[in-house]
Image (cartoon, rainbow, N blue to C red; front, side):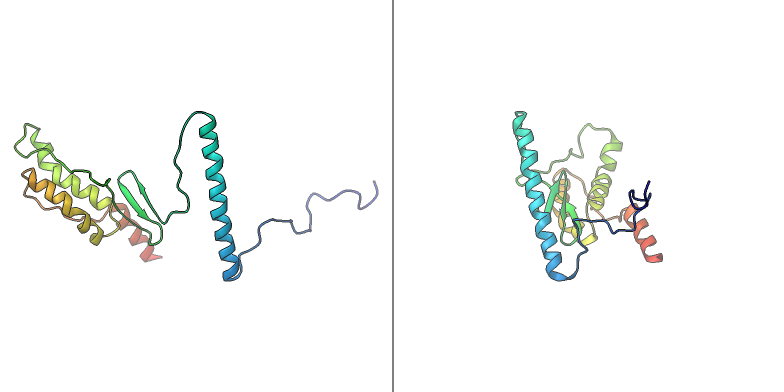
Amino acid sequence: MRAGRHLPAFSTKKPQHKCRPIQGRRTSRAVITQIAREAESTKKKISKIFKDNGFNITIEANKKAVDFLDISFDLRTGTYKPYKKPNTNINYINKESNHPPSIKRNLTKAIAIRLSNNSSNAEIFHQAAEKYQEALTCSGYQQQLRYTPSIKRHHMQVHQGSA
């Protein structure tokens, strides 16, 4: 073989990439706009697949806040809080009910733990806890809901602070 007819196992040429590094404010806006367009395109493709198979799907793209199960995420601030559907009534078993004593004894604590874990900080917990506290009081419970920092969240803060 003649020299130069084949490429060596590695190449010294720079690869031709479609993506360019983000430089400056205008370029980053263009990237964000492109991502939004791609999200809309992907949304349409997924909707078509569902429709072709006889299903309906609702997809919302490029949102700033998302409600998922019983948590609401604010993607701008990085905070999260307990979520319940509008017009949902909060009801708990009555303290005088025939449920096992351990269930009635631990109900307030279990609710406080769930609300604490679903709240990114104490202020958000206290805002959400008002409605739950009212429901507990109506069911005959006198204990107050108290914020308890999540073990995982506390563990992460300790490690972040030591780095």
